[in-house]
Structures are given as structure tokens and as C-alpha cells.
Amino acid sequence: MPGLLRGVARTAVIAGTATSVSNRVSRRQGQRWARQEQAQDDRSPSAAQPAPPPPPPPPAAPTPDLTGRLDALKQLGELKAQGVLTDAEFEAEKARILGG
Image 1: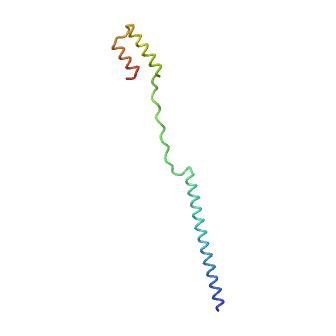
Image 2 (image 1 turned 120 degrees about the vertical axis):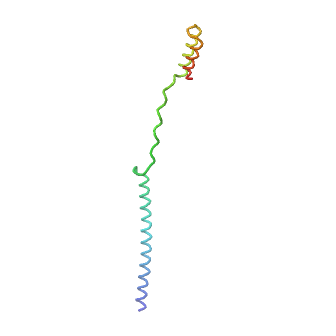
Image 3 (image 1 turned 30 degrees about the vertical axis):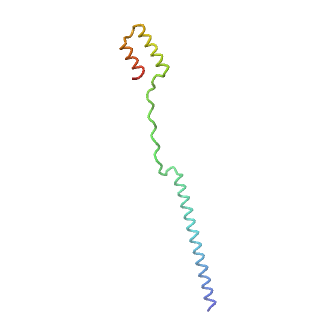
């Protein structure tokens, strides 16, 4: 009888160890699969991503460049010097050219 009891005890220890190892392997494999799924979800285009920002508004209509303004002011000054424009007309046109 002692031999039978020893055999049963040995079988129980081996079965317990096998169960413990099997559970540990299953847990590790489950964690590995979960990490892989998480990585795939992070890379997939269907993953929830914030919407891209709206495009910037179109630029305002360009104002005449500095050279163009200077030329217009020179012509305006010449017209005033020739007496074609009054002081009030000169100031009004100057304000329009300078945008103010």
C-alpha cells in the first residue's frame, strides 16, 4: 500500500505542476495576443483618430506692393505740383493708396 500511495502522490505533484505551467503559458499567450491586437488597433486606419484641422482660410486679396504704392504716390505728388489736384483731393487719394 505505501507504494501505491507514493505513486498517487507523485502523480498528483506532476499533474499540479503541469497545470500550473499550462496556466502560466496560457496567461502569457493571452497577454501577447492582447498586445498584438492593441498594436494592430493603433495602426489600423479605422481606429478612432482626431479629425484633421480645417484648412486655413484663403489669403485676403493682395494689396499693391510697396513699389507700386510709391510710384502711385510720386505720380500723385506730381499732379498736385502741377496744380491738377487740390490739397483735399491729394489727401483723399493718398489715404486711399496707403489703405487708410
